[in-house]
Image (cartoon, rainbow over all chains, first blue to last red; front, side):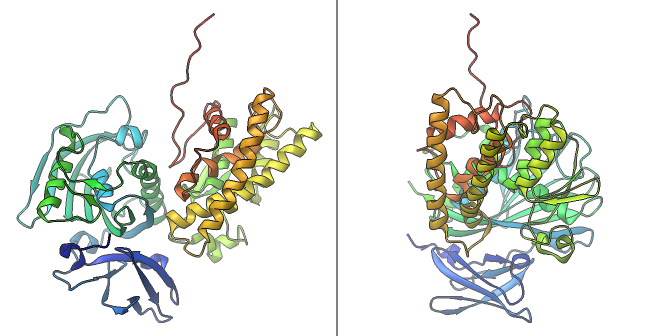
Length: 280
Length: 218
């Protein structure tokens, strides 16, 4: 199944991380089952092409973006990526054998913290997800607020367990972000954005952008932590059945903690997103 | 001791496992292996000219290669001498044989995982998977007959050896490279026994054993 969703085709998608594409380098990747070639010349000029010829591309946030259709809107604007007191780095691009929509949904879920990230983002018996708020904003983003969870090691800079506040934000079907408490600040939060590249309906590459406060942090420790956490999720994601996200409300039984996921699925239905989903 | 570490590396995990089993204290330095490629940097090549992880530094001694470091740590820190049975020539020979086998698992199962997960697109993933299946079949048969002879571990000892540690990680992570372990029941039972060794720790992608079946008291 190739992609027929205009909302996806006419949007920008990350296809490469500049930190992984050296000067003079070439990277072969896939977007919507179409082979894409990304090259970076010796002088640093980026070019992208598919089997039919050159494609429009942009470089933003340290990633290479392409639009396979006619751009209907620009790349999402993220002010946090321009803050001077943050490291803004990629967390690495990881291939995952599951629909990217499943990855978004897992990212929105606090219920799995004590089990999948035991000793880090949660621990038994503290498994309860307290009620939180979810809304679709005027900008047509999904926002989940008042999310709280006790975490033994919330960040590489944590010096013991803390109560972490989260805000989740779904920018677009395949782009999702979270704010979380920084252990060293009362008024500044760390920010993580996932730009998910739909390789196929059951396969994706997860690119992450980490916007973390610099205090007591290093780039290497930040990447270490992000990859530790993400690699714990990966086998869980790859064992989800079906690999596509079911949009029929009766297909899977949600619980109260899945409020954000329920809104996300409904929002996907309303936007006619079929790619990576199973539709009723 | 200092371990130059990458959290998602099965070869680094081998050393973290052994040090946990032996209760050895160590510090780690996180190397940005991916996507930073810092293990290929001029600075890191001062430590390991091959540009590979893991490496350690212990009292001024710098060592590279997971299997070599397993030998070193076990020889130095295992007072019982069971992990590296230097006093038993026949057993030691078999340990070394399976250490070499573990390098084959790295060259196949680990390569397939790097291809699928970490963008190593130059790897011939079909060949890597096929190679892994060939090795898994050999190990599964070996473990089947070992179990039949009352032997729980890869080598004929009452205790696990560094051969078990060397083979474990990339077998356990094989599904991330599209290599299913369904057809290797003896390997799966051995993995489960391995996870119950006192001091066992996990890495991302590997989960602890479920609760053990308690035999009712006689």
